[in-house]
Image (tube, rainbow, N blue to C red):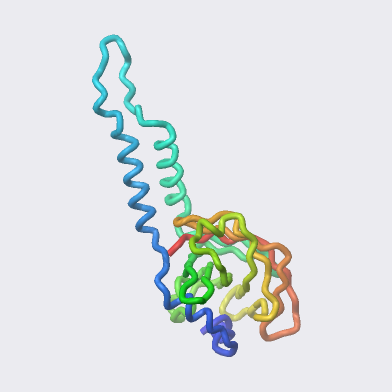
Length: 215
C-alpha cells in the first residue's frame, strides 16, 4: 500500500469521508446531451423541400447548434481518461485523472477531488503511479460555479510506490486555480505550491496542471 494511503490513515481528514460517501456527478448526462444535440442539429432542417435550380445543402443545421454539438463531442473524445503534467522535484506525468464533486449539503462544505486513482484508497492491484491527489472544500453548488475561481485545498504527490510522499499539511493549504469546470471535465492549475515531504525534511515546489474527467 502506498505512502499516500498511510498518510490518510495517520492523519485526521473527516471531510474526505464525506466526499467519498456522497453521490457524484457522472458523464452519462453529458453524453446524452451530446447525442441529442448532434441528432437535433443534423435533422432540424431535413424536412425543407428542394427548390428547382437551387443546390441542396446536405448539412443545413443551424450553426450555433452544430458548433455546440461539435465542441461537446470533441471535448468528450479528447479528454479520454484525463492527464496530469506537473513538476515536483522533477517531471510528474500521468495519462489518467478523475474528478469527483460533492455539493454542499446539510451545513457541510462541498468537496472537489482530482486524482489519478479512481478510488481514494485503492487496492494495491488497482493503484497507479505517479499518484496525485488534489482535494479542496468548496461552497459552490455546481462545478460550473467553480469555473475561473481560485480556491484553497491540499495536494499530494507520490512518484512511485517506493518514493517519498510530498503532501501539503492540513494547516497549510495551497492555492488552486480552477481554469475550467463543467459536467464533463475539470482543469486545475497550481503554481509554486509548497509541498514538504510527509516523512522527511525536504521541501518541494509544485507547478503544473491536472485535467480530470468527471466521474
